[in-house]
View (cartoon, rainbow, N blue to C red):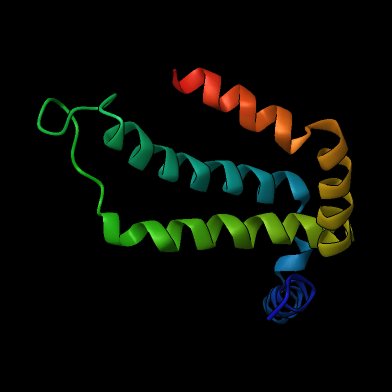
Length: 114
């Protein structure tokens, strides 16, 4: 399934439940909440939050669902603003290819590793 098809499936899912009527501000707030749940995995993984020293371990098995929830809410916002995400992403990639040349960035990243 391509991005356009996924966007349509999610839009239909939203409409069937009336979720397309939620204001963008509420969907955005929910999106930030779900991103916060992903951030919990990152802070534990990178050792910023120490398990057993005031923090509980998040269930790593839930991480794929957290990403799916973030993606779904993001798509809900995309649909709210009637953006063709697939076309937008492809256009932005072309702009970024020129703005951030691969050769220069490859060299830069190699230098950082040294």
